[in-house]
Length: 126
Image (cartoon, rainbow, N blue to C red; front, side, top):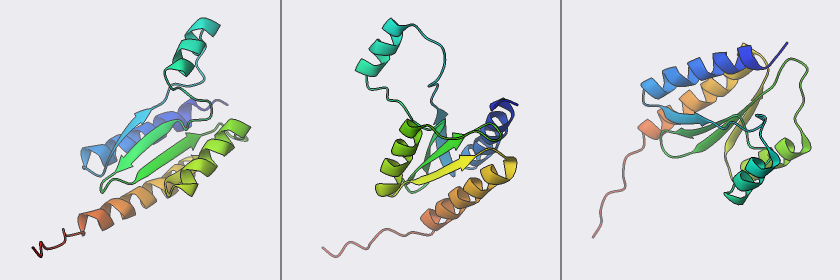
């Protein structure tokens, strides 16, 4: 079984959150077939191996990443390295191969978005 069904599910769930103003997201099309010349050009422009499938900015500015896997799929070393770098910087990072795992990350995004909505700007003391 491929990653496509879980990818479609995650995209639909993220679209709902985006429509609610809780996040903005985009898909990173790494892993698609391309020529060596085109791959080199992308790398020169800043593309990197291991980037998660979805990059998400949550209301309040926190970053989140969602890596999707087919059932029994595992992360590559590049993906594990990218995950560790993101988590070290405080980003939310989730790996999902089932709708339930997607929902875990969705709940975290909703919680963080809700907390951001409760923040009030500091009063100007000047």
